[in-house]
Length: 69
Image (cartoon, rainbow, N blue to C red):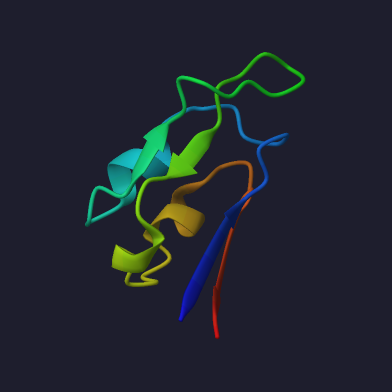
């Protein structure tokens, strides 16, 4: 099982992780906003995530963590 977490307070919503995901499973939230008024990235379907870590490696703010359990 793969668990992906995004630190929403660190995320600036730049979208680099969205573009990096080969399965198109990430998007920029239209309903959430962090303390700095950014819309953070969010996972759309955790069950489809393959744990490739492309999103985490691309994130300039290091706010994505992937754990394989």
